[in-house]
Amino acid sequence: GGAVRIGAPATDGGLIDVQMSLFEGNTCDQDGGALSVDYTSSEAVSLRVLETTFTSNSGAASGGALLVSTDGTVDLDLSDTEFTGNAAGTVGGAMELSADALTFDMFRGAISNNQAAVNGSAIKFNAWTADEPFDALLSEVSIEDNVVTDDDGGAIAISNPVSAVLDACTV
Image (cartoon, rainbow, N blue to C red; front, side, top):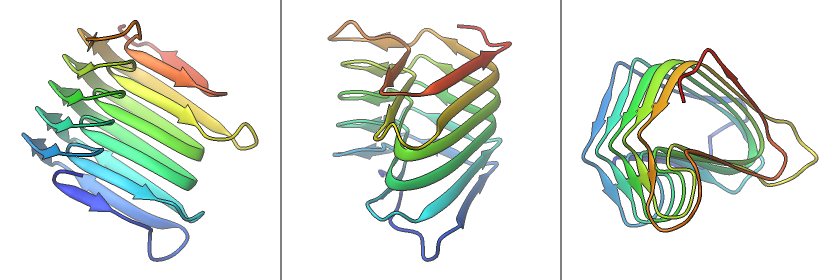
């Protein structure tokens, strides 16, 4: 992560809490331009992001603003959070979420004007196994004007079995 990188949590069930923050203009020569939660252990972690803005961040590979990449279980809650003008060199212009098991909830937010070269200009969901639940719910989220520059992907890209629900969203 360009601003913050979090490796394996100290204990199973760790909580990362980000509130009323601004991540702006961060860069990373790998993944997660602003914030990266990246570890290979099977530990469980919860990440809660409230009333936070990610703007003009870039990751050379994936996750322009946010990368979550783990062999473990992740519970990710975003509320009243915006991702604007972020860029990824491959996938996940705003965020890439890759895990064995993931529960992702985003309530009231915006994902706009982000870009990725390959796909998932807003969000790239990647379930590493079909054996674990990988569920995403976006409610009252605006997903607009995100661009894929070099390939034919869309604003939301899904790899492997992911259950995704958009409720009262603008896309």
